[in-house]
Image (cartoon, rainbow over all chains, first blue to last red; front, side, top):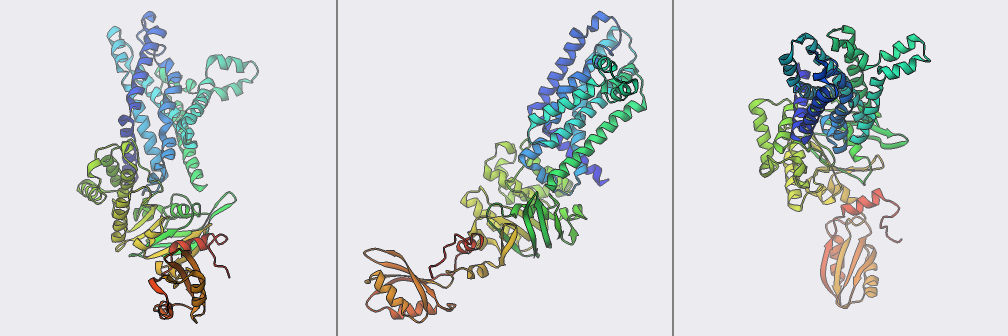
Length: 248
Length: 319
């Protein structure tokens, strides 16, 4: 009970911090512009003539998140360490876990808010045709879970350094691996020399492979568990890294 | 309230804190002195549970900081070095957050925040962002955070660093007043602060405690303790020196300054100089010259500090 209250307090402060700096607004505007541009211009939403968001909208998300989520996550711990507030935070009567989860949840909710603000595309597609809204909702859920997985990876890289830029770059590289492991051109390359089971192992690490199901409207527990376990593992690594710093 | 037993911290091959033990009771203000890098901040970080000790134990109010960290931390208010605060919040928002995470709710929280705002003179910057505060205000904001839950134990790492003389005076007064009911540890470089605030002081050097006592006891360790400074006219330095050395209670003298009008000398006693015996003897010996000034030194903390922490370069008297 008490730990939930502590997590909520931390998350509330963190969310407040996003909105008291220009970061939140800049992020939301850029995210929405990118979504709009890629959906309607590059994705050819109108030309397709389908009442669906799968290809023109959700296909781009793994790539947007690569940069945008890293930008949201880079400050989480790097800033605390640079300013020294980590010393304040971790000597409060809370556990390190509560702080880690609270900060993560705040950023994840923020990403959820940005994602939710893309609702005009749902209205548009419903106005123009009659799409399966269950599939769209499922896509949104998958997209949010994927954002959480990226964010958790950014948590690790942010805890590793005092410099936000370093955190950003390392996080982009790690997440790029998560994407490329399931990116068709890369898979074709691997298939040339690797045995089929090895290809399966590699692709099973990819967010794209697991996001695919959500896009089609299939809510597979394995995909949900994949994203949740990336989040769980990454947050655990974050706690290990933070403890490592303090132990010296 | 605070018990530190055989505490040690090793960073790589460096023993930052090396087997130190002490305790602080309610009503005590312990000054923590030492040169830069002596291990003051590391010790305080271990007491507050920010970094785990390599060996030894810390208990706060009976709770071990490693075994029962949450219970122990509830009792502690902590002002870290350089007074960090969330730069993206207002002063009010920051204090409110700290009160909330300390478990204060509703009316109690409002009262706690307004109490520390008043105590630390933060009204004028209450709705200003922490980022835009001057160093003094930021320091006091972080200090306010440390006392917001009226803790039994206060750990303050250089609480007067970066404050102007008025603010320093104010904060010292605050620490002294709170020290009547709490157990306080604070570190400082400023030796006059020890006299102004502490009931006891510990000098730590290269991770070890090298002195532990009341400020008066520490001063007693000074070579100058009991020495007499005398300024006279109508005599030259050499003659004065000869006359003084002939006195039974004088061990040696050193001439501090000589000009056409007067000579200033410091006279060291042979045995402990009690009740101003030495000064009386010098006064009685004054014939043919005039004493313009005469006083017995109490001993100086900075000299004690230097002779303890830098034994090689201390101003030792020629034998």
